Image (cartoon, rainbow, N blue to C red; front, side, top):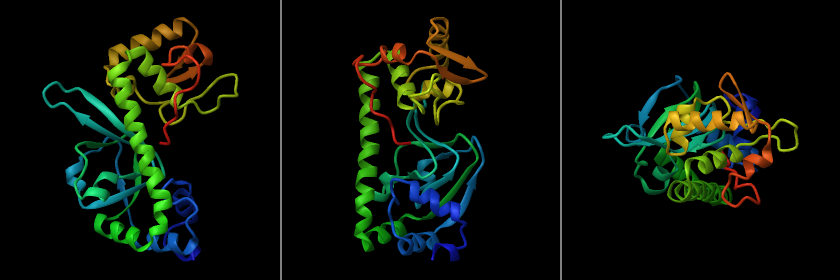
Length: 244
């Protein structure tokens, strides 16, 4: 059935890789795809969550940053960095009220979208989706818990170490590359740990001088994984990774 949809096969594969739609059968996946419409957002587009309060979105390509901004100080903290297969706004889907935040397109975004009420009805009609929906929601809550703990309990060096360790792509290689955050500016990395660009830049330069990381045109390469791990909260094991 999926082959007959107005969406290409790669669209279905992206949904299948999502925590929300993993292991959903062809008929059910085809049904939700037929209800959705494609939408694109240009890179750096910024949208108040309340302006998207009647639609539910799934990301096909690009990254979306969900932030909160202190209008008085201009300080920004990132709640989520979402990747292909992720959805927003989950809170609105549950409560009918959008999150108190702002959506920022970090890349050109390709999205699937449909009215929130229609998505809610679809989930109600297919309770088996809760097998995926509840763990996906639980992971987002877990991510917020780690963020709150980092902001309240740890210094900037530890928070930055946690952020990097959560996004290590290949722990077995000689040089440990990062996924999702690797080409983000120091300003955006700072927003992800509740800091400012100058502090993050200073910390990365300090690690570079110690040989812990190397910096190449905005990309971070981990040279000494154990040394970076020693800067994390328990000095014994990797902090839980985010499913972004």
